[in-house]
Image (tube, rainbow, N blue to C red; front, side, top):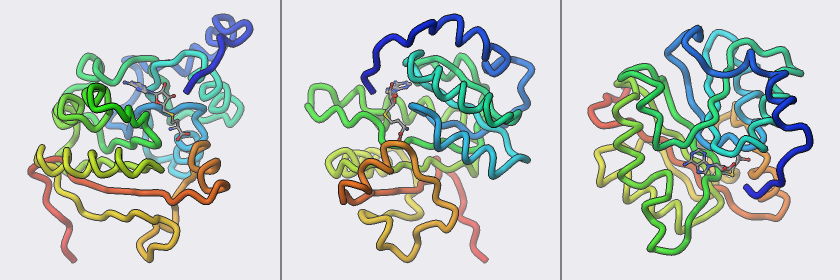
Length: 209
Ligand code: SAH
């Protein structure tokens, strides 16, 4: 997400400093990596006050908007981590992550940039190390090549796909509690189909009724 440096950014971030992720926050937590303006993670945290959430984003200018959103909603079950996903192991111990959301991640369409995709093996290995055994990775994207790459990468790296669709809104499995992200709203308005996949990190067991 390209965004100019926000006016008074550092002072505005300092005003939200109580929302930075730190050692006082109760884990385990669900993560969104690349939360952008934070609409999804704030609405999800608001709907699930008994669960904990950490929003991860490497761009401080966009993170500022997410933090101000959480502050205005008075949420206390969410914290914000301005960091690159490649450094997650420095913040979370094995098992401390209950689930990971990747929403409309940058597709990096050139093959020479495949290693930058958030579903590349390098990232999946990082996620696997911090995810609890039953934790799910849930991905939404408008980008079919990125989706197909992600499905192959999940399968090649021992994630077990438990549901997937290339047209979320025409699919009977569309979760009733689906929360739209800012990008998702834009793509839906343009008539673009949304792809979604849910996968368990390796070794996970399906709950069979
Ligand atoms: N999830 C939001 C924003 C999607 S845009 C939505 O759906 O509306 C993708 C976001 O991921 C951008 O804000 C970008 O800065 C962030 N991002 C990309 N690579 C990242 C990385 N390696 N670590 C953390 N954030 C990343």
